[in-house]
Image (cartoon, rainbow, N blue to C red):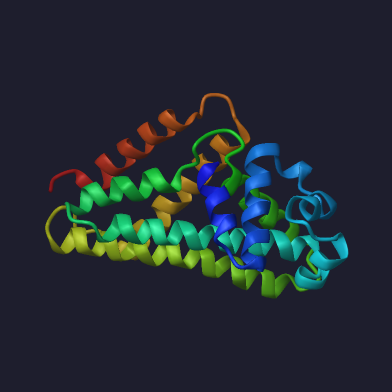
Length: 204
């Protein structure tokens, strides 16, 4: 977690809290992330944290948005590098799928979606989550459209194919994140490669 530690050191106060929250999830698990424990980690009282974030639900959603922002930068770097559309699609999939059981980002993602069902302002929380999902979707649609236009992919509808692919990725990613037997990361990547070979790369 050296990268997370550096992010905290160089971050402004509020961002430092979010980086510390993500670091705690990665190292100790989500169940250990309490406002009191986080406060001790960053040298703030629970009351001070509540002043900034108002609730633990808001803290978790802000932490997810912060983590997604960092992933978005990495995704942008991967998708704009030189190489074929197929190579960049492989990089997109690799970034999307969790590293393994209790992957901190996916653990947080699942918790935020679960909590949003009983949030005081469910609509606003869902809108913010939809913005996260939308960024992944738009980047994938653009990549698929590029691959189709260059003749690397079959002439599929990019938006429709992206929806199907992300549904597949989400389902498998949840299995990996919760540690479902028979669906480790390498097995999931194998299933996705087969899906892409059948639906996107065949007869190109």
